[in-house]
Image (cartoon, rainbow, N blue to C red):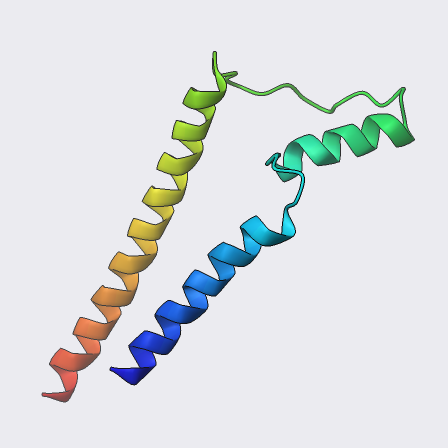
Length: 92
């Protein structure tokens, strides 16, 4: 029980620290920051390729990004559960 409380407190501290250290109040993804830096350093840079699909709004882009992350977490959680169950079945 004590270990769970410590882990929960650590997660809360990480989330709160993200808000405290970002004093500007604006959240920008790392892709946008990288693009800004590249155009600042090399204004003549041409991208190698264009995106296959460009969402019509930022909300759809966020939704697709979250969906991709959720599917990845589901696959990882399934694999961990599968192998944990497999090992439990073998030892009994």
